[in-house]
Image (spheres, rainbow, N blue to C red):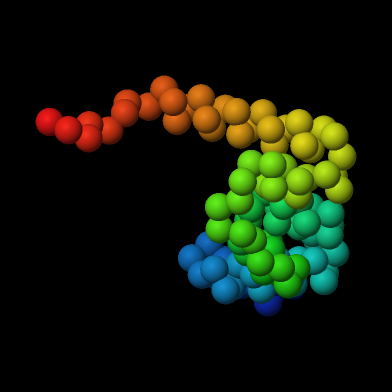
Length: 102
C-alpha cells in the first residue's frame, strides 16, 4: 500500500532528480519495487536507480562494458540490450550527417 509520503515523493520525482532517488528508495523499502527491477534499471544506465542502490554509473561506457552490466540478468537481458544498441546505432546512421564544411 502506498502512503501519503510515498505518493508525494512520486509526484516530486517527476521534476527533481533527488526526489526521484528518494522515491525509488521508498518504493524499494515498501516492497512496491523489486530489487531486481531497480538493479536492472541501474544496469541500463538509469542514474537515479544507480544512486538509489548506492552505485555510480560510468558516463559513457564502452558497449562491451555496458553489456557486461546485464549478465546477472541472464542471456535474454544481454541480447535485448545488444539489440537496443544496434537499433540506436542504425537510427544514428540514418540521421542526416552534419555539414562540417560549406
